[in-house]
Image 1 (cartoon, rainbow, N blue to C red):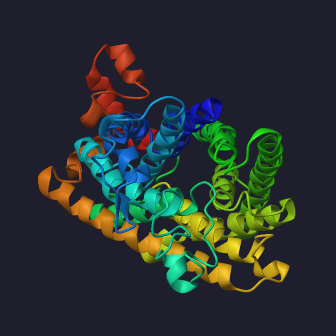
Image 2: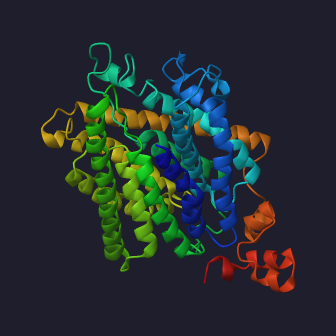
Image 3: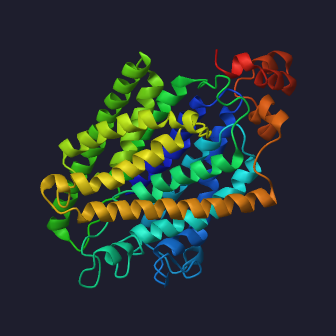
Length: 436
């Protein structure tokens, strides 16, 4: 568990920072990385103060969240429970950091620092409680699944979200879309190229994300009431399956994405391979303990193809999801969550079961979309009223790295001239910012 928690933290810093940083333009790469690092700093503190209490406290509020003051500052928490706190903390960190990819080049850093703690409080912690803390989206009595198919004291068919299809990926994907719509499109969006400036960083980040994801999925096993040898055998069987499913789904998604690119564009790209990695990982996250390896391959292929097609919708529908958070995390999260109702070996319709699990999974996914959309809209409007959301137009053109952080990732001119004036000149160059 300690190793798994460390792997999940690695997924944000440096993996996601590298992945998003490489996809950004050169004049905003540091800002993208700073958004990941600052999310870790802010959410890590907030989670200890009231995030754990809101998620796993015993004083439930309408099955939506727990009393944030019951365990405030980890009061009355001790011993091995700290390990679980740390593991869950890293999930909250990366969920918030994922949103940053939708708002590249134009969100004020001060707005980001205010948005993150408010958003995890209103969106992440409640959804985590609802899914994993015995709340409304679990199999609890009077929960959503129980209202759809009632059983004896709880849901007759309990929802499945092994490691965060709803809590992490649907949540972050919807939040990215809402925040991108509130911000508006980047200057020149759809009219000038906004290419990734360093695909080497992106490929490296994707590889590290894949590596860290084994902590994300495999570390999420729950032993239940088993003890001794029985727990040991359960652990071995469960984690072996989850590891293999996570791997083969990702492999299949890479292939699916590259096939779409080759047919559609004539080229199978490194960016497509890196994006396919993430699409497969996202889709298998909620389903990794419920599918057979063949089911995981099928899910990965579908996710790779669907996400490759979905990332182009932003040009058709004219919304600026800068680094494809919506196309990968929202779409991939929805596919993985709903596909459990089809491919689950213990409840999916592909194995001859009734469609009840499919109905429950679809209902849970829809509720997560609505909750995240409303919570993000409220938080976004509050932040806009307090500090504003978007940098000035001139600052956006010049480059958010120099304006917000006083730095440049590639200060070649500054190195020769010995000052930041060179870095500003470099950041403002269209030629350099497009990575030509």
